[in-house]
Image (cartoon, rainbow, N blue to C red; front, top):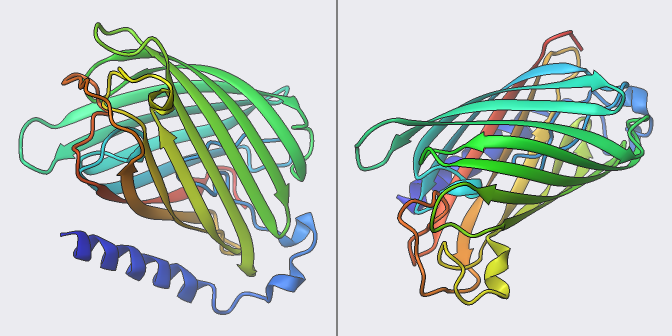
Length: 281
């Protein structure tokens, strides 16, 4: 199964690269006007919008995960619809709903999440540094309600995209940690026209590095290749990421209600998205 998932990831990446074959060389992308922007180049990091962005978009994401759950992906097939928009005054709204189909049968489940993020540093221009802080709420696949706080960092140039998030989550469910910490990092470089390639990394339940009784079994990490493409004269853009999940630390505690509880063996996830700019390119 892992071999088939790996081949699917390679095929999808090859397809995106093939779509970009007729784009101009990367050295020609030097100004904002040369860039056909995508509202979200990364699969795991959340980036804020500016008044120079395409302000409202609809996102469809699909993933397949084996021995993974939580921020890495759903254990099975997941379908997600999201809306992202610029509210003005350096405020970004992100709302999504997901449908999860288990690998081993069982009931189909759903999850919802809403966040509002404000850039505190930067955010008036697309290029350069932006640092934001946001609040949100979520209801995960196990029907656990959580309060979210997210710190975002982004640095954008026409040829380079950097993103980082620190997500703090308090779940209102007995037996869960008082505070869960999730770190997302992403970097992409222009390789041809509007095709960007790089890496994304996710660190989940990082409190497991200093808490021996971390409630979800310890810290987990994922690192994998990342691609984004925004074809010119199109409202559509595409993102793709995938990779292995590994356990960084081990805790003797487990929680059958925590969506982030992972089996001891490493897992694998592939996630891709199609984004439609609602107001045109």
